[in-house]
Image 1 (cartoon, one colour):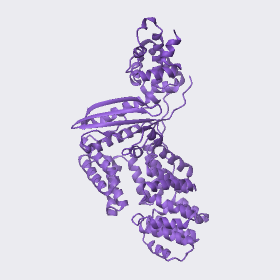
Image 2 (tube, helix red, strand yellow):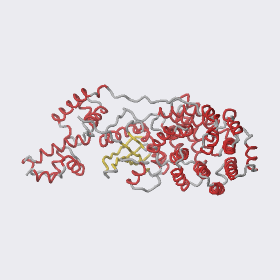
Image 3 (cartoon, helix red, strand yellow):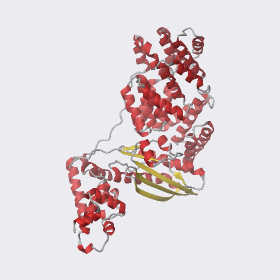
Image 4 (cartoon, one colour):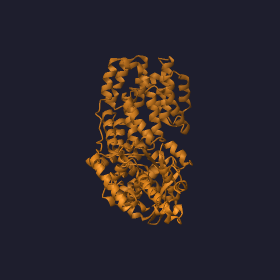
Length: 597
């Protein structure tokens, strides 16, 4: 038997629609969608579009074909939720975009208090149907974690997330309140702790709350979460951010972000930062690997696109970088990282007038004062004004240990002026003052002149010390999958098919066939796809077609219509029957009947 070439299976879970009478249940629908995305991300062979890119389509009108093309997926899951008191009605359908067919749909009526069991049940059923139609997946017995026993606490968590993702201070304050309510009911609800930490970090960075107080609250929440689960992917992403931006500790930041990816290999945000860190240290092969993965599962996320543009800037692919940055700025003219790197590219290409114009037209509230001063000073110096008053002002600002942007720009400017001793003196602020922005400025292409100095390589080792890769332990194939055992199990399967004809049951599933043959569903899936070269639906429908061919030439069945014979063969859809028959025989059922008369 020849092994089938492994097929990439990809899916996007679109936001489930709220068809309840109240819009207040929007948070509930978003929560169910997110849990299904998280559940699918635990299936190793399945490429699942991340939340940010899936939710991009919540308020946009696109055809399924357009969505498929934008996300790079071949299957889309749509659904709806109706909440009425304690009752839930959840409907879901799987659509093969390439074939333009809905190949499965189902509705569940359940009680809200069983929400986690419902989410797990639905995720497992959908994963099973996806496997039957698309190809081999190894599916665990449970896909949804039960984060708490308190359903009310969980509802507060969902409300908190719903408001947090609106990214404005009013809603983030509401989110903080909801997370606190969740924690009051269940202090061990780690996702509420991380939501709280994320919210306080946002308020601190965006300047919507007292910086030190907000950071302290964020760190406190992270430390509590660390006690509960030190390996949690989301926690380690936050710890990485904290190590990098507040401790200026590249080594710790890299270790935490690697732990995040090991804990959740499909974590797009963690791959973004792994790419970013490797870009900074100049390991562009690793950086490319991680940004391409992030792009494959989260292509519409502005952060993914920015990190790709930043990678392209750092690798001197400036035309490609500026295309992405321009698109980001068309969508949001106040996208600060995109504005900064766009300005850097203008400076790198010696288009200093354009750089000056971009800085000038950017609203004052977008740049921090030292960011704007640093950019203007750099342009001024490169224009030839080496004794500019702006430089003196920047030097004065850089005396403040907390003026991290001033430190970084002063380093870059000294590097371009050939004042290397002073530039390296500024670098010491990384270690003395935890000046984190210098971690970016040190290896920036605009610092190129200083990189030929022998001291640069020594500082590179100090600033970006080598960190051993953490490797996820890969699953090894069970010994029961060797050729001898596989052949024996296939013979047993074929014997059961011939003697019992289970395919005549239109409700036959891979899981029920596995139970009848006493073969684990994952093993049966592997045998069909990798050993026999057919997915479950193809395998079973071929058996049904063979049975139909026997019936259609039997004179005693001449009074039965073709579709009637199809139903007697186990098909329950005329479309599926016609498609399967044409695929197996190369002709329509009618043509086959005529060829046999």
